[in-house]
Length: 337
Image 1: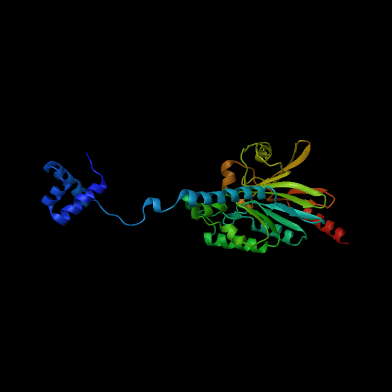
Image 2: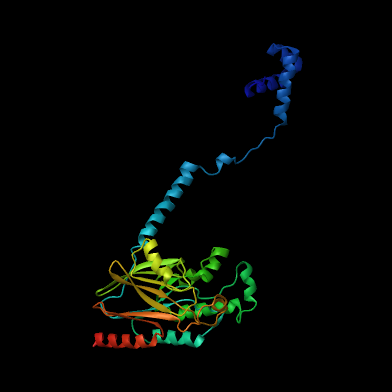
């Protein structure tokens, strides 16, 4: 039968001090028992001695991990609460919103159409921009890297174009939601590149979805801006936004998304006796292999716009922003006079 560690230490000490025979006499044991004791002593001497950090010495669950997890939990709860209570207040004056998505710098985009929209926005007082993602192609992940070889511009050019656009429109962009192409940098490296570019700006920013209330005078609308919605339909490009109202957890008035590369469309729909708006945004690509592969109609418009008066009246358009911008200029001039 095995003996305890203390007994083994006692035997070892006696043997070292008095020798084997004297140790046996002092212990008062038989030859067989002494032989057995010595086997345990030798086994102990053969064991590896380790001095250092043991597993128990690294992270203590109750004192270290759980307090950290509680902080993360509280932060997540607070963030979820804050996301549902965000507000953009335009004050008591006319204002407008242009929704832009799927520029796709790096692809064969209609740069003339983009610059026309940019100049229209910059030359129209109180006309602002909500971005819905995919500022560039960003083919840097997995098998998509092979697509980069056929790009008309280099990846470095794409980055420069994204920076140029954001800096040019800095004073008008107030909501920025990234798309799947933008987010590939984050998935590959953990770096949120678009967030880095707009860091410090006075805007609402989210990688997947922004929820907020648009206010201004009598205007009070709940918006949800995403790059894409689930529940696609080949026959109804705004199906995802409409179904999300029923299956989601946010009672919105306006839902905006791009991704599908179809022509821009604003479709009113009614829920609980109130008119809501589902917005599908197009792309600025002239040659869009994605749309051709999937059989989508050629895009005839890229953006959409809503303009508001302080009394709550509203106009909207899909495609060409210019006509609505002209109306907003007139509203602002009338308000200022």
